[in-house]
Image (cartoon, rainbow, N blue to C red; front, top):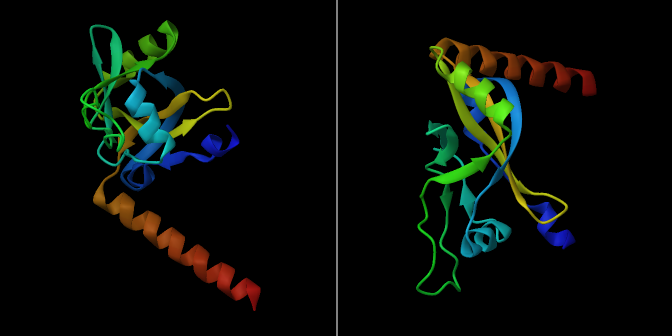
Length: 151
């Protein structure tokens, strides 16, 4: 059981393309072959985003590779998956998403100590090109400062 706790699939594009404003932890409704693929580390969050449908939240475009030992009842790789959040969290997120410029993106997919798949989602606002350049400039100057401090 301890080997499955090491699974942490991160969305590396999230912090590069969005300002992260608030984070939430959500459970995911999965099939048997999906959880087995996640335990093998075969998932990708790069193009994933969250949407509301009939008062429920779903994650779209999250790629979970088909399980290699799965039979005819293997899952579809990019299907919509329901997220499990409290009613208060859903209401708060739904009102924020209706505002201009806000979106909900998955940041980390992991397996908790009980063996359940959890998805960390974030309320985010998209960055402009000049914001991305500023972040790169900050990172470069910090790297230079660290390099000079070591000498």
